[in-house]
Length: 259
Image 1: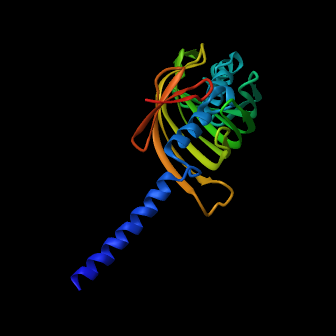
Image 2: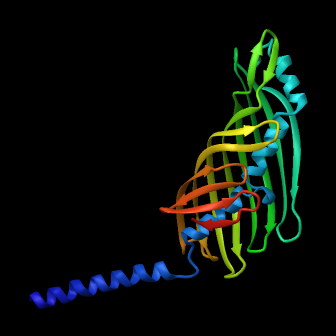
């Protein structure tokens, strides 16, 4: 009886182990490396990613007309003043083609000695890059604070603003080499991102994200879920950690390199 019990237990362990190995080695399933590629695409400025929306919103928020609006609003603490609407189209050269359209609506809120600008946008677009193609849509919200100081009735804008916000992207990501297609929803949150209003660049900041979806054509199979953190190293790169693995992402085109 002991030998029979041992044989049954050993057989169960072998079956369980085989199932784990099959899942781990399935080349059509989404891996953490694939998730990093999705994050890279989500951030890429020349693919209409979050950094393009962040700097585009900063450019609109820091324009002379908006700064003038801050000055005129400084004597009247009106909350929710609508300032402007703008449409920004992102296109990139051959080899990393991207066409993205998004509209940012800016709203001014005013406190006694502290102002904030919030830019919201919706977008949709496609990317045809050397390594992947993608089609996506989503929304984003960016709130800029620490805008400057009020001296009397004159507002003096600072060069470095702080941005906190969120970005959502839903769509497909196809890796050309393997022809693997992943359907995903990516949610990113950005925290205390320091941005230069004059040069429209990112200095530093952190964030977190979740990615859920499925690979292939059946939404009930090959599902995946990943979560991770990101750190903006500077205006050109970010470090992303997914499942204990670290990746360097080039913010211009979303290129991913394991660290």
